Amino acid sequence: MCKKPVEPLGKNPSFPFCSDRCRRVDLGRWFGEEYRVPSRPADGEETPPSADDPSER
Image (cartoon, rainbow, N blue to C red; front, side, top):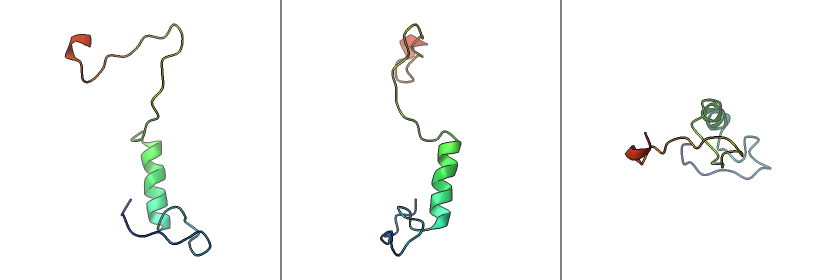
């Protein structure tokens, strides 16, 4: 999160984050759906319009 160097696991209980604060910020971003894993629509599911293609709106 903050780009600070990260101590190895034996010295840092928050590894792979530099601190507990950065670990919690990252978790909050996942809960807030700021990070997304791309996937393909399931069979029969419509593909949502692309934000990049205005003709699909």
